[in-house]
Structures are given as structure tokens and as C-alpha cells.
Length: 228
Image 1: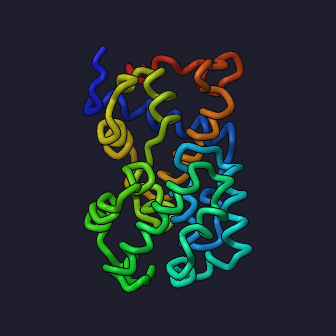
Image 2: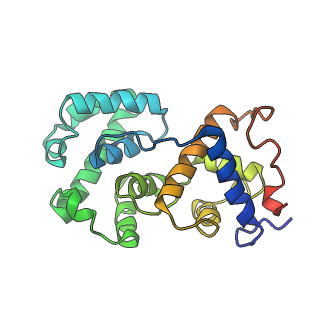
């Protein structure tokens, strides 16, 4: 089997899986947030934890009025920020990562999300990846959901689902996996948004570490990577 992502045979499989999941689940309405700043903070907080815990931390921040402006967060004492995000786990690490982003935003854009939103996508991606604590997945989540850029987000569910369907190796790197989607889908932020959300839904409900294939909406699509 040719598993290289450049194979044109990947194209029908990638699109058919999207269509199948969309028909099965319907639109997911991601990202559930009230502001661009809330999306950014949520993307940092969701690293290594369940979304339910992130929601509790976001609620604390919202209640404290810290998601109203970047200025408010910049003036918050580190220990107070850590206390508020505690439900998300690794609270000292995550509060420091939020402050790292805020410092980057202050140094380069005067704390203005409006100014940073005008930045060209590839340049902004490079800048975000230089912020300590923001890796490719968090960076691309910020680009897609906060700044509405057509950047496909890859996470553990993406690797699990599609490696099991032989689109790439289980140990494939982030950029390799991302190319499978960006080279075989229209460059469309709405499709990228919906597809990522649908993959997460599938991963949580069926394609777990111990898969439950019996009722999976993709159970009859195991040969998609071959283009069959």
C-alpha cells in the first residue's frame, strides 16, 4: 500500500469521511466562546485536559472580568491568574503560558488583538510558534478559531482516526498529517473548522484508545486510504 500523503488516491477518502461524519453528527458549532480573547485563552488551557475542565477555568476568568480585554489579564498578578485557571490542571504552567502570550502581544502589538489580526497568516503562525508554551496544535487552533484563518488543526484524535484508516503511520509528524488534509481539501476555513470538530467528536465517542468499531459511522470505510 502506498501511504504517502501525496497520493491522489487519498482525495476521495478524505472528502468521503468528512461527508459521512457531517451527515452522522451534523454541524458542531465550534469554537464555543464569546470572544477572540476567550478562544485564545481556551486554546492554551485545553492542552492536556478535558474540555469540561477548561470550561470551569474559563468561567472563573469570565466571572473575574479578565476576558473583557487583554489589558485586564496583563495587570493580573501571576498567583491570581493561576488560582483562576486551576480547574484546567497544571495551573502554574498554563497561567505562565497565558502570560507569555500576553507579553508577546504587548511587546509586538501593544496588546491589540485588532492589530495582530491584520497580520498575514504565515507570518503570524511563525510568531505564535515562538511564544513559549504555544506548539503547533495550540497555534493552529488560535489561527483557525480566533482569527478565522484556513489552517487545519491536527490533534491526537486526528492521528488516531486516520492512521487506523492507513492514511499515514501512527508516528507521523504534525506537518505530515496536516498536509494530508490541506492538500486534499478545499482551502476553506469553514470546512477545516467543521472537520476538526467532527474528528474530535468521533475520537471521543468511538475511536478511543480501545476502539468501539461496531457502531462507528466509519466502520464500513476501512479501505478509504486506498481510494476504493
